[in-house]
Image (cartoon, rainbow, N blue to C red; front, side, top):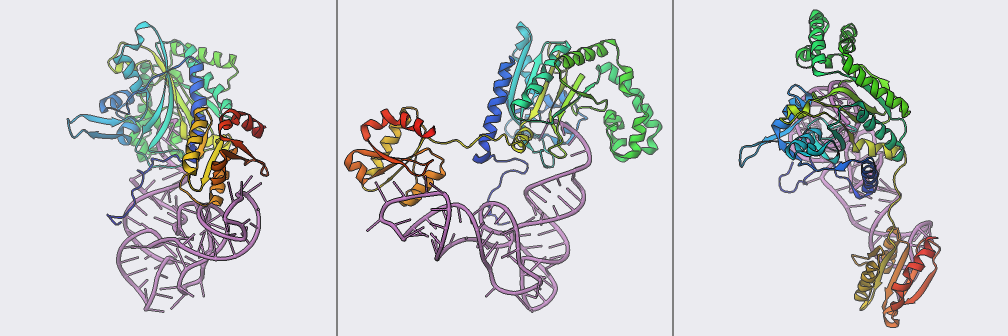
Length: 429
RNA sequence: GUGGCCGUAGCUCAAUGGUAGAGUCCCGGAUUGUGAUUCCGGUUGUUGCGAGUUCGAGUCUCGUCGGUCACCCCA
């Protein structure tokens, strides 16, 4: 590649969202944020960069994210170990601890923004991707688990989405998992000959993951492994029953997936994923669960937590598929001008109309009368406001309807501001 | 990180190893002041990059970079 003239490109896996798509993104964002607020969640914003230790401690040393997907570096100025956040929950809990947000009781919070994971990009998976997250801090009961899940169920139709299904699992407490894990590892060791390299590697670092293998031989071993469900105590079972009961009461359908294990170590009890088949291999559109140990693990006063994160790129892609894209915005008027002294006349006209609250686009970049008219039409504007030497001399404006066969009228310059709203209303009708 | 497919004009795509093209977009004109329809004309390229084979490479080979999909993992 030539060093001098080679064009710079965006970083791999990090995308520009162009104006043509931003309308859809913004309508998606507006719907989601209004929905979060309506359910009583309040916005919080955390930095994109945190101490690397935060994610290592929260997500877990042996997870894929921490092992090989984090953008981490040592700050050249003060040698701090920093990381571009790969997810939001850790930062959100850190912020809650740091600012004692729970001093006066439980909190419902939401946030949105980009996350970073150094993975090989593919459809629905990018190195910079946007998430909305919601978290409930300080509530131990299954009622808030149910609330978070039912919330999502209500959101999908608002976004115009169909065919998103819910998978649910109960992964119990840390103790229950470690008892199960001990027996599971024993079982895997007993059948080590049938495991592939990947399974052997994970057998000790993350044995639950072995159960998810697609290798038929490994699957056979996994199928005979002791199920986690057999290790769950009364408290865990009761929590899950409470959740299922509320979901049923709300009419939210789900399927139990005993192999649903999320890739972050902090989860306990409830884990869930909302999944679509319409996006290829990356079908999880929203995922979450409970993390009652995370506050203590990050050095805070122990407090229960539960939350979810949804992937904006995936949901926006689904909205596109479902034809939920909003119509392109239409300016009220496009102002074009040609001739001696017309620029200032047109410029102040546009300014006055904007001052009255109208959306007005000035022709820019010169051009012949014809090409200005073409741009006026292409802008989608309802009206063309034409300023030529004639109009300036007469102290008038020509107003042309661009959404019809071409009605056109002349109006005195002084009357335009007063009559514009009425003209526009007639055109839009 | 591994693998399949693909890189030609801003965009969508052509071009039996033999002079790089079309549509669209944009600009100008037909209408010296009127868009969306019509007609005419015009601009647009180191064929991703670098080597190799060949008289000759957009085309074949190798490398490299990028895109895409999948594995893996997850939002």
